[in-house]
Length: 329
Image (tube, rainbow, N blue to C red; front, side, top):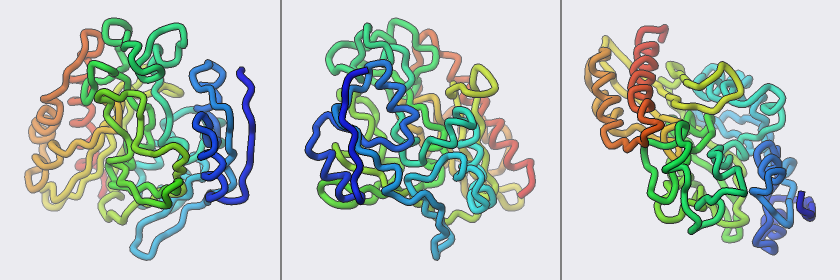
């Protein structure tokens, strides 16, 4: 491991100021992803600024019925919180489908959103990778890409974003609160992560030294009828080949409203807006669900080794919606 400096600040403003002095520094929360990347020599920060105790580690109920999640809230605490389990079960299910119990005890809500890709070329410093070193190429396109993107990729990068939690938050239209060198801002979760385009090394819209302080989930009455379904190679401790976060508002067999996001298929959590539009106001039937899924995936550009993801995503989305409308309200 390369040598680095470790620092603590008294508050968020101090932490932001510390990192602003170090272009190669990084914030340290739970460290479950960052420390792994440091061990692999993928991440080489010269300064770690510990922010674990600077932001809230609690879930607060908001006056409008939504919730505010402190960025330092451990994933295990968040998944078990009564408000999350009762009002937003999709969030709890997404969190519990990720990592292991030990990692969930340490990983934080804010850090979860900033996980780097698990592409094998990104994690191997002996291979080229545009995300790790811009301009070196993307060997995954002609190499091993079974787990990688079928939507939103570019010739520069076909990696996928690994967070389950982020997919559920996208379906719920959450907002991310940050504090940075230029002050605070509120970022819709759908705009936090970037598609690679010609700059695959930029995962998010965050500036250097900008810290996630909280996540706000708006009230959504029908989120009580929500589900997260994750398809993976083994029953635990595996990243999604395809995942679906969905919530459905149904009355008398008609879909009044619906929220859908896909994971494991794109470089960012993928909001299935086209499928949502087709489903609203129509009957809650399997053929309608399948047609909406096919419309959402119409622009998929799979590679030879991951073409199976197209029918897998279609079937997973259809099955998830069927389970929601057939289950209890």
